[in-house]
Length: 486
Ligand code: BES
Ligand code: ZN
Ligand code: ZN
Image 1 (tube, rainbow, N blue to C red):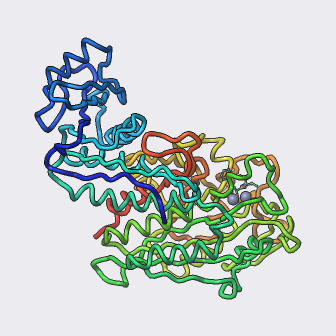
Image 2: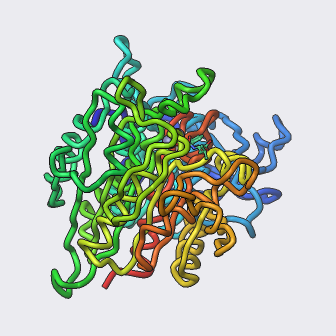
């Protein structure tokens, strides 16, 4: 995967030839927090007082050239009591953005703090620097170099591995659907992950005879479906140690099928494979940092298109689990492909738990809005709380929704075992979609993340340019690290 990147180095000293030095000031304080000792603190503070009303508000910037000739950029770190790793990550992103805006090509960052905070600043700058310009015939070369003053390089090295996972997700999600379709996507997964020691298996249409739900979705497209299985065996116990499983929705384009979507905004449905991309991203991250865990990733890849052979609303298909599904709306296709992928995963791997990720419902955006919380649904309180905690830690937050028999009942079909949507007017679409999925996990400990509102950012934020976010990689990496690594 190609993408432009800034060069970030951790070094014990400032780069002497770099004219720009970035440092920080907490809100309302009178001394800059810098680690190099050459910035002439008092002179900088004097300039600030004389020429501005800058007082260290979070993300505010002030630049001045001091008598040694250094260009000093002071960034506001906000309230000292609110300062933490996530704030540091955001400040790193802001620093990158400001340097880029001012077309500064080389800068040292000198902020005094503990090693994790400093590494987080570096990581924030890296995450913000992503750009996807593969299809631009004239490219802006990214030739920025940032040196961050710190003692410990290991923490940033680990963050960088995770960052590669995030960038892989963003690149996959940014690809257009004429380039990235199930077959090409599966090949790309194999290329990117097998070199890191991940075992890859690719099931083709001919291997999917019993997966009626997945096949039904793909039958209206000229692109054949794929099911890709990724295995990372890093547990220090043994291969028999039951894995943790990640399952992803990979609809490379969602037209809605015969239940066609309106044309306005349909182009955004190229990101309907973001759940699967996140699974690829977390598997890459675990392998790259040689995580001591056994993990499997399973992604169901299909295009939901519409031709003469497309599935009709009212078709009945038989899923891999044996349950029959009445397809009342062909636009509720994510849950159909996941039904087969979930059943396959629990049946073959008997995992400790399954976490699925999917851009599953528009209703989750109605409930939670964009880019704040993703929806969490689970049949296990402990798993749910672990995921919520990990999300809080890395600021990829989850909000848990209820599930219950009453929500489940509305998808009982009159003539099949289950139907893929509730009767009109039931409401609670995101919960009902989760209830549908739960019928295919066979009581395995399971959680579902509906990332329809968090996978794409229309404006971008401190650590992510506008477009694909890569939501979930940092969350799941923290989750594995905290609760599963042995
Ligand atoms: N891919 C969509 C969900 C979606 C919507 C993702 C907006 C990202 C942004 C999904 O396949 C879909 O169309 N769901 C339907 C379900 C409905 C028919 C019950 C929806 O949400 O409208
Ligand atoms: Zn759909
Ligand atoms: Zn969809």
